[in-house]
Amino acid sequence: MLFLSDNMLKHLIPLLQRYHIQLIWCESDDIPGSYWGAPEAGIIANRVYYNAKTPVHSVLHESCHYVCMDSQRRANLHTNTGGDYLEENAVCYLQILLAEFLPDMGKIIMCKDMDDWGYSFRLGSALSWYKDDAEDAQTWLIKNKLLNSNLHPTWRVRT
Image (cartoon, rainbow, N blue to C red; front, side, top):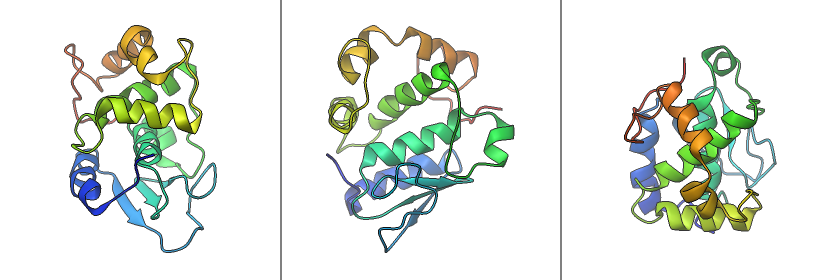
């Protein structure tokens, strides 16, 4: 499991700033806005909370929820991100895609960490799903203008 090192933060902070997401360090094991509890990341408004034990996949997952939710839910965001099945798939797809912008991670490590954490996909692994079964997530992300037709991030949040 890949955790938030100084080198990782050097790349993750500017990546998330493109979406106006702030990373907030927590000294304690009590992470504000954590749905699953520490060490999983928490989210309140546009702030993602983490500590030394928080995995990178958790920070990216919560951040991608922020990106993918509509503006009404985003305005009241605290802990529970909500959303439906298609949005959750879009969150997972975007999380894997954004991992490619992190030199120490990439999609292979992201998918392995997602599998190790317990994400489950029809094809048995996150990487198999991403490569061979994520058309619905791609379509959703393009329709909501979060990816362009070449499957590159637009660096926007859903409206």
